[in-house]
Length: 149
Image (tube, rainbow, N blue to C red; front, side):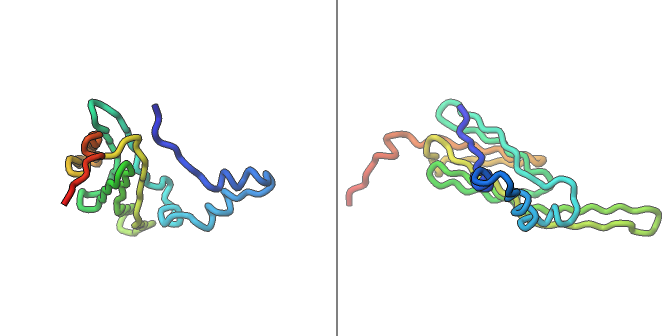
């Protein structure tokens, strides 16, 4: 079962008139700082999502960042991961610098799970560019419990 769906509002708009190239138009205006700097690949957060024994297991590849630059938030069944990326590329030929490129920006990834997550039991571990999240499902009894004062 695939719980992730990528939504692109420009694809919906492009259906009305095939002669318009809305994707190209929006992409030229909304290019990221990585693309404007001439870097070949824009950084992305790639994830693996598994469901096992009452919990979700997420592995997210975020190369080139430190754990202090990563932010994870969980609200109900919605998970958001973001990171501050600092890319530097320096090419030298002898003592003369031919090109010096630096680019800074934020990458993020959000997705919705089928079940709510027990936020008090969430665990996160980051090592060598790999973020591992353990997201336990909220038990039915915990969802329906009402405290009376």
